[in-house]
Length: 464
Image 1 (tube, rainbow, N blue to C red):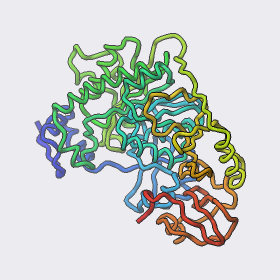
Image 2: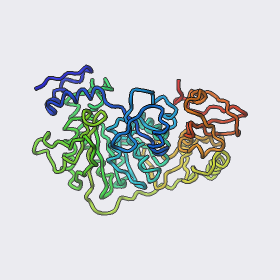
Image 3: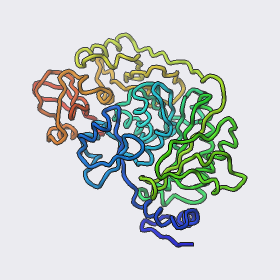
Image 4: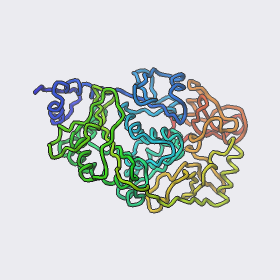
């Protein structure tokens, strides 16, 4: 057996396993795993890939798949550019972009992302929905669920509900309600070894087997959440047969109402390896799953499997939520909209008050009582002593042209950077609340008094 080592100190047991599975390819695999390609996905809720290519401030190379995905070079700092703050793109592993594309959401559908934080795949799903339908994005860890909400807000998603629940409680609540369910499962994270010392330290063969057992349980909950004829897509960022082909096979054996669905072809990807399971574990269709190896496909590596429900019948129908914000609150939002915006995008949907926060509830949202909800919809603003103050999330859900007399800045203008640092800026114009934009894309709110625009960019997001 070829002996392989790496400079990053990958676990010896992991190296031994992968060398045994890949043979002569192991050296190339481990080398690629040390230096995975970086990627960026254009947010098509904001602009088209062609439009982004025209204005991109750093070199990007289009990926063959999916559309709107790009490889990043070493030049520039995409995460510290005003376009990032305006939600024009999401920095994402190239292989991870394949997962939402494999799920294939169609406009108007009801989609659940079961383990969605930090939001790369959820924001991709939202872009594919094109502002229609309903996305329920869930993560059971409260801090991660809030990070998920912030990323959905930054990319201007208006049709999402963010929950913080276990998969079992969601299944008990919704039933077979969703057209498609994504389970990007918590896993041993082997593709993250180059980025995370903790992932390398916490890895063990026993941990891999523990992950595989939890993944099968999560898939069982997903099976209760997808409608008859619907699709579950299961993905991991690990290479273990136990967590990949093994979990997929165990799910199909235990759920005969599902079959392994074919995935779109991805150049360089390999089909699942049934031969890495024992004869008793194998099921039909494992070759239709996908393995994205870092030495064959750009990115750190992913596994993707689709499971199509073969059951007949109609989707489950949860009772639709009937929001009922008090009339005075509806009037406050209407007055704000009439005074500071052109048109009335927030009033296209019904409003709900949660505590002192006002939300626009996506059409078709089911009743959410007894669930832990982080965001029940598009956060519009806060009630303060009988007045309405708009939320940053409201601004990011708008277009620059929605504002009355918006502040229009250039990305390399020092005034833009001053705004992102939380400073007041001097831009003459109409008094009152105003959208601050970069090249017409919304960054956030300001409030103009005279020639000074007071800064309302959230403190936690301000550049240092």
